[in-house]
Length: 315
Ligand code: NAD
Image (cartoon, rainbow, N blue to C red):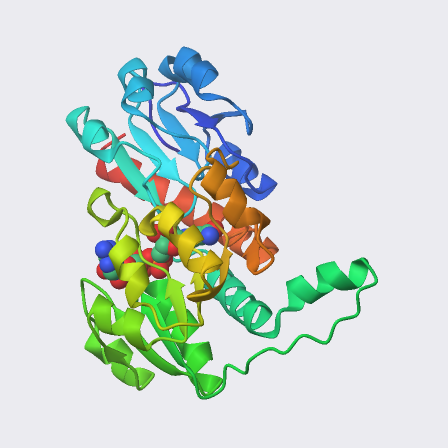
């Protein structure tokens, strides 16, 4: 059981999680408060009462929150992608971060493939029309024999590539860290971002966002994209310049966009709302990790990584 000078460590779970996580935390002796829809103002008011925060991607752990959290020791990100946590500021306060890396790889890669097939065969588009009794036989494209470009060949990128490979799709990838053993396994190759954009029929954005990679695919980069290509984004929208994407979609240079993430969730800017409203755009509400299996894995990985970290810290 984690120590806290005789008292149970207090955990505030800030986002919706599987009940299994709450049960696991309680069974390990933590004092758990569950506030799955807490807003940032309330979080700032309450955070000083807790040693541990558990967050998914909705809650923003800003420097303002961290400044108020004088008792905080660990922030557990129940998932992967820590761009909602001010990590640099947390480091200055000696607050440790743990994640559940790997827990949702399968679920997110399956969603990526589903979105790719959906865009290329216009399933959602035609479903919307069919529900208005417009039974239009629009022509799609096969993915077989095409080239997929993966931006960020990490866990999810690799899992997606394995399926693409089995579907007869050639894989190229751009990553700032190259793992040639994994790439060789699927018979793909690393290329520059420019080459990827110029040569891919379908682009998957699956990298981890950092300050330096916001607008990685800029207005000029979008002009390099092969006309008629599709983009699938299950990582973070900030990788792509949104207003420039809107132009590329309107001009038909990008044939379709499918994303599990938005620039703001829910959307704020007019250009963002316009993208969402387009016929050839499919948006899912950040459900990449929202499967029974992934949420159970998230619970196990988060709690076990949290316990390991506390042990390391001697708590
Ligand atoms: P990972 O760490 O295994 O892989 C990320 C890869 O991105 C790494 O290989 C890294 O080198 C690469 N990368 C980082 N910066 C880059 C850049 N500027 N250009 C090119 N490559 C870059 O992570 P993962 O488990 O594959 O997850 C990837 C991302 O997917 C997460 O960071 C998160 O944003 C997103 N994600 C989304 C959901 C969802 O619900 N939609 C769920 C889980 C993860």
